Image (cartoon, rainbow, N blue to C red; front, side, top):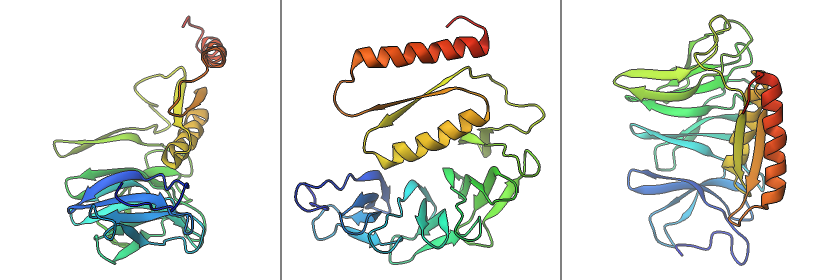
Length: 248
């Protein structure tokens, strides 16, 4: 064990582990400051909280760690500005990049992707819905790429993938829709894992907005109860059959 971050029998549940310039960054809960940004060089003394972003016992829940150039980007929340885009240079300089949805509302940055030195992600500024954004790590350089759906409705870009100087993604522009059809979606959540829980909620909201019935399944490291799971899956498949008019 490198360090007992949450001393005693409590669990710190380290998540989102990522190598940044030879240092491990991750989120953990020490039982006092909530879930915050931590770093480690592999020693007890060199494993410590990088910053208490949401001061006190509340959690900032940093996630979506993505390295772009000399910065580590992630999403985190505080009481003043909600969940927004943050970055660190690996030293004491950790800051909110931009309050994309001004005030205490959250822009909820997601799908952070390195595109040849530029960060691409999805966020909501409260005006144009969830659309594609980019950032160079500065407030002025964090901008909306395009409002695909036009106006308040969201195009909900996802599956962001950068290949050969091109960013590919799926989105709904309100005219052509998407080039595939989903009859139903199964969302698997790992018990007591904040990252899984947060993404599951966003995915469920996304699927419901698009008329796609979701089934959430939560499991831990033990074997699930087969009978109860089978019953839920059969009921879910019946909903899918009714929606699609097809046999599953």
